[in-house]
Length: 185
Image 1 (cartoon, rainbow, N blue to C red):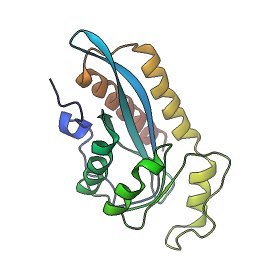
Image 2: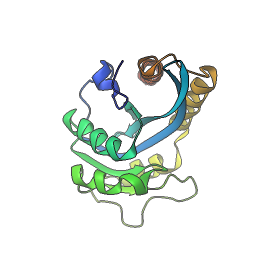
Image 3: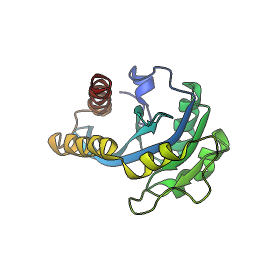
Image 4: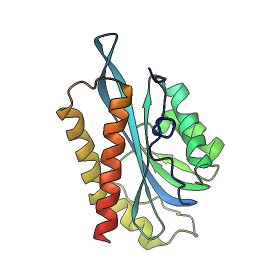
C-alpha cells in the first residue's frame, strides 16, 4: 500500500517541471473516502492551480493527506523542487494553517483566505502586472470549472478502492483539464 501522505509526484504523475513564477496560486481540497482494511476512511485530497504571468492556468499537483502538519511543508518543498521559485498570492481556505510553511519556502508569498468578493491586495508587487492580478482575482471561471469538476469526481466515486486510485483519478482530471486549456489556446 502507498504511503498515506504520498503525493502524485511520488505516485508517478504530474512530476513535470513547473514555471519559476506564479503571481497567484489557488489551493483547494475536499474529503474523499478510501477503502482501508475493507472500511471507508475519510482523507483529505488537495490540489493546486497556478496562474501564470500571462493569465493562463497551470495545474500544479494533487496531494493526499492525513495530517496538515505533515502535508504543507512537503507540498511547498515539492513545488520548489519542481522549479517554482516565486509564489506571490496563495489562496486557500487553509491559508492560516500553512502560512508559516509557505513563507519558509517562498519568503515573498502571501497566504490569503479564499474569497470571491475581495479584490487584489492594496499594494501588489510591482513585478506583477495589474491586469494579471485583476484577471486572477476577478476572472477565475476556468479555475472554478476545474474545482467544480473535482467536486463532481468525488460525488461520482463515492469511495475509492485505495489511495492510489484516488490520486490517479484526480491526476487524470488535472491532465484532462490541462489538455483542454492547451487545445483552447
